[in-house]
Length: 351
Ligand SMILES: Cc1cc2nc3c(=O)[nH]c(=O)nc-3n(C[C@H](O)[C@H](O)[C@H](O)COP(=O)(O)OP(=O)(O)OC[C@H]3O[C@@H](n4cnc5c(N)ncnc54)[C@H](O)[C@@H]3O)c2cc1C
Image (tube, rainbow, N blue to C red; front, side, top):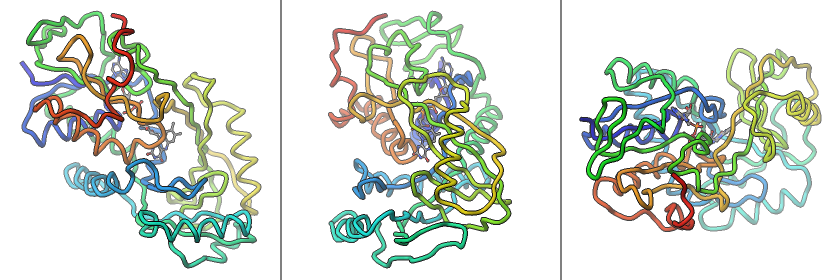
């Protein structure tokens, strides 16, 4: 018997596994490779909403936990994952500059918005109004983290690389049984895959497809992360990730020509040097109706839990929420109401 089954090894699953380890609890992960949001994510750890210059929901608290959390995984896996790198927001008008300076005076934001305007960043990047620097940000190489974490779990025989079959789960009063494996509890971390989960698919998860292109440019020679209408993120060897798109309608997993053209058009409006597109990826962000996580206990089956709904901010949300969910599963400490899935009607689940 293990203490937990964890379904999914994206940002949510990894964070949950880390918390289980910290608490000395045994677990087995099932990962079927059916969703890609965490694998394709840019891995940006950024507390500021760069459209409006506001602090993202609880981002300051989350940031304090997130950076040590990823550094700890980096040390454990002995692989470089975290790159501190501030973001430069390109201003489109004098009004935007003014909004930046007023935002920088506000409590909460003053720690993150540098009040020294940077007039120019790079000869290839057009800018009439300069750039504002967001401090204390960085990126994690999520693709590498997930593959190395999978290897780490496989060495300890704690993971099965297969799709979890919901029909094979037998739920008893005090334990669960799944294909001969007994567990006390299960935590579902399937991202947008939740829509196939008969126990939790009553929750209002509205996927949002995101796509990135990778470009190669010898001329660009840029080390900073730039945000204009798209992010431009240097990843080394003259390669840059450019994105992402947001699409509420298309839930297909494949990259699209439409997104590629949109990103090329937006990038060409900002940089003046030559580039080639060398790759393109897509994933579905698990977004909720009210833009808050969907976490907690099943309303009827008390040993079933879900940790989901990270939307476009999984890097910051998952380290904190995973701590809260393990407090719930182990000590029955309630989750903050705004993330608890109990806020959605309990009557409409279908099994
Ligand atoms: C293009 C793009 C860029 C992004 N950039 C950023 C960024 O820079 N910063 C940021 O904070 N966020 C970013 N995000 C959002 C972030 O990726 C998500 O918030 C986060 O990855 C969600 O993690 P998750 O573990 O909940 O879901 P997922 O990453 O979807 O992981 C779920 C896992 O469960 C597995 N699974 C599902 N069903 C089953 C099943 N039945 N059996 C077994 N396994 C199953 C899937 O294969 C998958 O591995 C980005 C998203 C996209 C699409």
